[in-house]
Length: 182
Image (tube, rainbow, N blue to C red; front, side, top):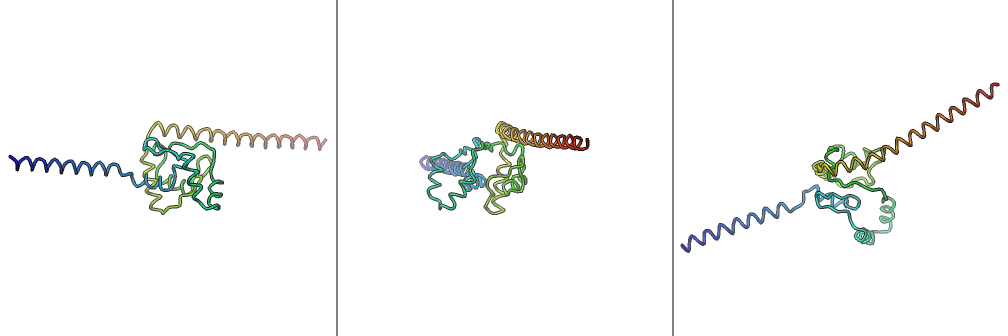
């Protein structure tokens, strides 16, 4: 009876140990998420569905204090007050190959390229892009696309205004030409 209890106890400990290892493996972030954090993508972006929050102002200030002045000036020039999207649904609308191009500054959204070019290896970029493509939160994806729409509308309005101005200028030229011939 004692031997049987020890065997059962040993089996229970083995199962508990294995389930603990499985839980620990589940807790390890995906390689793409690790790259997202390591490359400080969360300086601007959040991914609420993955528990990734944008760095707080205090964390950003602390990071700034540890940099060299030249690097600090360069980063200061690259920062923007533009609202950036939660990337939890980026995979709903974008494929990994497009994300690779966008992060390499070879692709644009409404004529605007990503603020910073990815500086890791090609393999790291592919890993990051594949992970981002796997993020398919429908709500976040719709919100991201809505954020892009006004920029598109503004660009169209600017184009229309420019076109209208050109037409008005042309009309004025025509009128002037007619007046000159009289």
